[in-house]
Image 1 (cartoon, rainbow, N blue to C red):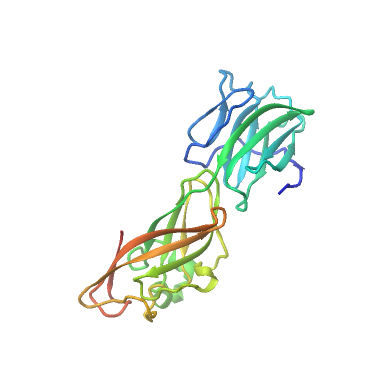
Image 2 (cartoon, rainbow, N blue to C red):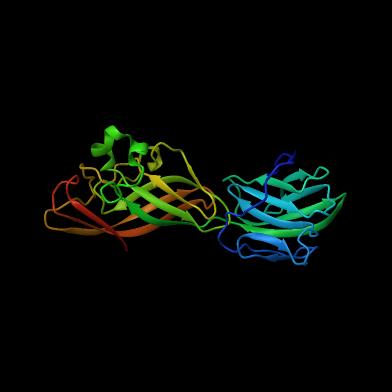
Length: 279
């Protein structure tokens, strides 16, 4: 897909949100991998490199040019070899950016500095999300989370005790969009196709590279009403396992993680002790 051209003369000093090393190709003016998802020139002068730094920040790819760089434009090439976009470089401009968003194709992107018809510098950057599920939290076990802000104070007992939050983090070099959240296995109310795709009050949630987000459920996975295949509380003890599945756009699939669970102390969900552990 080819994106429209536009001119950018903004951007503050670039910082990268990526926490993993980015894959780099050679640069005509020399560049090295810094280990934090950016590229920098090999020479000893920080100002002389044409492509001084390339980094992903949030949902943008930022390019910082050296003070002596004489280029007309910067081109961004997609992994499939097609042009993603072009940024004209006005006189005196040293930073341009491309809005990558959360609908990009993951892979190696090439950044070309062009003067006239000649490419005077080139480097590449691997842009790819890597989402992982970190933890599952319940209102009774994690009271410090903003449950009232999400579900409303009046719904604390009925709604908050039935819902769950799922913490995810992105260890990749590009942003990811979460599109769905569901629970399967030994929870009281497993639902294969939850309303609003399982996300409470959100159609999607962006997780930038190097950052974490809490996802809040809409499917009442810990409801008093057991589903046909659900597991509930017991005065003695019930133990089992359940899976959390998070649907993604960029990676185009579901990320999953299995947890162990124990119910004890009561035969009602509102009163029993629920302990969740990583399986």
